[in-house]
Image (cartoon, rainbow, N blue to C red; front, side, top):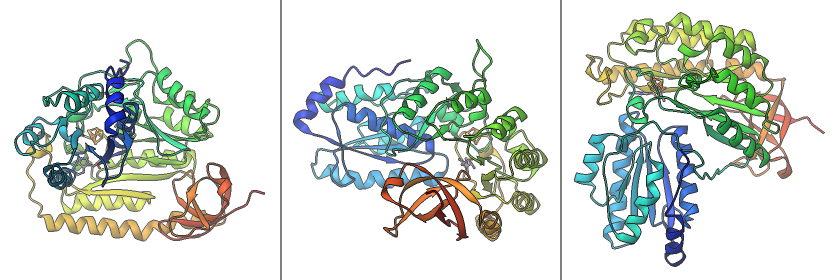
Length: 458
Ligand code: 5AD
Ligand code: SF4
C-alpha cells in the first residue's frame, strides 16, 4: 500500500502562516528510530520546520514498551509538557509507537492525560496527517484503537540524519512470541517488504552517496517466510543487495538463532560487504530457561552457530542481548549464561533485568527470585563481560581495518571517529575531506570501549 497524504497541501498552507515546529522524542529500538525518521519526513512534507525541545509546538513521542522503565519515561515527559500547554502556549502532543498500540495505555492516556491530541499505534502512519489536519484546523480530537493490520506502507517520506549510513526496514512484526516479549502484540505478524521495493530504496540511497546500510527487522532471517508466490529468503536478499554499486557495508539486526541456517552463514562468508559483526541475541544460556522463553534453540545450538560463524571468518565479532532474572531462573541457570559468555567472548552485550509485560505468557509464570538477587546477577554479568573485553580488542592491535570515517571526535577537534566492520569504534587523526570515505587504519592500542589507530592510505 502506497502512503498517501491527501492533507499535505492544506497543512502546508496552514504552516505558511503559523510556522509550526516539530520535535520528535524517540524511545526504544532502531525500528522506532527508523519510524521517527519517517515521521520527520511526514512533518517536513507538510511544511513543519524541525525545532528544538524548547522552541517547538508539535511534540511527537515515539514510544517503547519492551520494558517497564521505557513506559515510565513517557509519562514523566508528558507531565513536563502539560505545564507548558497549561500556560496557554500553542502546543500539540502526539503519542505514537509500541506503547500506544496497547489498549490499556490508550485508555490511560484518554483518562489521565487528556491534553494529548493524537494517539496512534505502530501500523497506522498513513492516518497521522489526517489527525494532524483535524487537530490544527478543525480543533477536533479523535482517539480510537486501530489494529496493527497486515499492510506495509511504502513510499513514506523519510529524512535521514546521517549522510553516509542509513537504516532500511525489510520486515515488520514478529511471529515468535518469546514468552517474555510484548513485541508480537504491538507490532503484529511478520510482513516482509517486496525485494524490489527494498532494492530500489537502497539503490536510491547508494546514488545519493550512502555507503553503509543497516537492514532492520524484529527477526530479519524470517524475511520472505510470508511470500506465497515465490521462494526468496534473507540470504537471497543479501546477495541482491551485495550487487548494488556504491554500498560498501551491509549490517542487519536482529537475526534469531533458531533461523540462523548454514545458507546464511555461507552468504556471510562469501560476501565482501556484509559487516564482520553479527548481533545474535542469546537471552539466556540455560537450555531450560530458553525453553520457558520459547526461544526454540538450546545452549549447544547457540554455541554451534557461533563456532560456524568464527570458522567462516575468525574476524567476525559477536554481540548479543541477555536477560537476567527470567521467572524460575536459578543460580545454576545463570551460571549457564555466564558459561556461554565466557566461551563466546562477546564483543558487546546489551543486558537487561527481566521486566514483566502484561499479556505475555511469562507474566503468568511464578517469579520468586528477589530483585536484589537479579541486580546481583546483572552486576556479575557486567563484571565478567568487562573483564574479557580486552581479549578480542588486543587481537586487533597491529592489524589493518577498513573504517568509514564518520566525523570528528566529540572530545578532541583534531581526532576523527569511525567504526571497523566489527563495529569497534576507532579514534584517529584525519582530515575533514576524509569524512564519508573508507580508510585503511592500523590499530595501535585498545581502550576497552574504543581503539586508537592511524590512517595508512597515502
Ligand atoms: N524484559 C527484559 N528484557 C526484554 N527484552 C525483550 N523483552 C524483555 C522483557 N520483558 C530484551 C531482549 C530483546 C531486547 C530488544 O530487549 O533481550 O532482545
Ligand atoms: Fe520479541 Fe522474540 Fe520477536 Fe524478538 S523474536 S521481537 S524477542 S518475540
